[in-house]
Length: 241
Image (cartoon, rainbow, N blue to C red):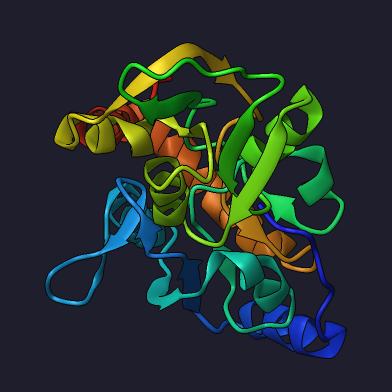
């Protein structure tokens, strides 16, 4: 999701060695602001599809997980710097990110992205003003479409931009926008959904091949026994495998 700034390679190497030496505590980095994938519940705890998924993956991989929240715009640099060990934050697998990170296999299919606008509005998707969260696949898509891109740090700000007239529409994951549209009569979907990216996976440092293999095996086991599809249906985050 972000422009990548490399952090301390020494810290990253040390974090990778900790796992190789048998350290089993894994810090799971997430945003905590992108429901239903991840959010902070009324008890102040990380919740959502990725919290439930991550806990199950750690159980199957025989790892102890600790959850860490980090703002989206620095989530990749802080992984590389060693502030946590994974990114599990609705991050789509893209070639640009794979230049800096390793990813597990995807744990969701590519989720449709959708445009949300004021009810009854006419939107020019190639010549208008479209909002997106900064450093996301949606922001890249808008920038390449010919439309004027306005970026915001958080997903909630993109919706607010439509309401206050800064943007004609917002482009985001449909799973995020569905409840927004359902709860706000002044907003509605416009145009066609688009498929972007290769699905969502866990991001890890390139030095942490052992950890990636553990999570890959855990994801595959959930695919094989149907439990991953059950979570996808429960949290309504896209198509099943």
